[in-house]
Amino acid sequence: MNSLRLRKARRTDARFLGSMLVEALNWASTRSVARVDALADPAAFRYIEGWKRPGDGGMIALDAAGTPIGACWYRLFPEHSPGLGFVAPGVPELTLGVVGVWRAQGVGRELLRGVLVQARQHGFTRISLTVDRANFAARLYAAEDFVPVHRRENSLVMVRLLG
Ligand SMILES: CC(C)(COP(=O)(O)OP(=O)(O)OC[C@H]1O[C@@H](n2cnc3c(N)ncnc32)[C@H](O)[C@@H]1OP(=O)(O)O)[C@@H](O)C(=O)NCCC(=O)NCCS
Image (cartoon, rainbow, N blue to C red; front, side, top):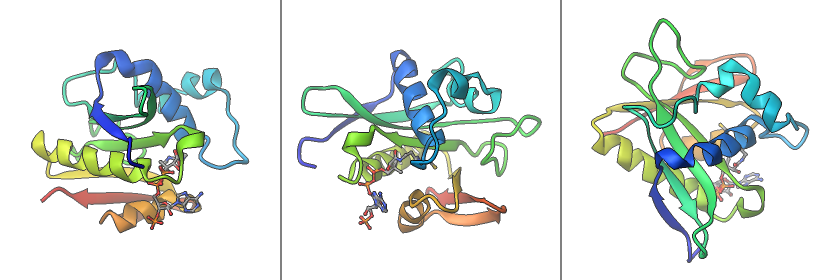
């Protein structure tokens, strides 16, 4: 996509990140959890709660008019209260979502690459995520050098070294 622009996520992007979190939760066409219900789940809401905290980072993709069309961001969780993709203290977890009509045009991959650069610049040496095994996004992550470190019944936890 020629007109794609990325910028760093700001504190004021919290609502849009919430929308992209809902997209990530509703990754399959068979899923349609309403925003209000999705964000009422503490296990989901904690990925954006209080955005933007120290240690948080992310990128927003914009269309030619400057409207947000996708987001990728990361956040740290403590060992005593790990996220779904937790692997170790100090390893942030990544979330990725693209607005439906903008999918399959390279936006997700560009966001992912931008966030990997940003996380490395922030001094992180690894980044993790969890993805449903049936979600084609798992193939995108593998193609961008994420490696499965835990295999659950329906999902994978994957890690990317930020060398
Ligand atoms: C997953 C997601 C972020 C990917 O972003 P995207 O902009 O659609 O993906 P891209 O266009 O960058 O494509 C990345 C790769 O996925 C492939 N792909 C894209 N859409 C696809 C689809 N519907 N089915 C299968 N593969 C697909 C592309 O072919 C590309 O691979 P290739 O370059 O080897 O051909 C986006 O589709 C999305 O928001 N999905 C719903 C939320 C979600 O699942 N988030 C991830 C949760 S872990």
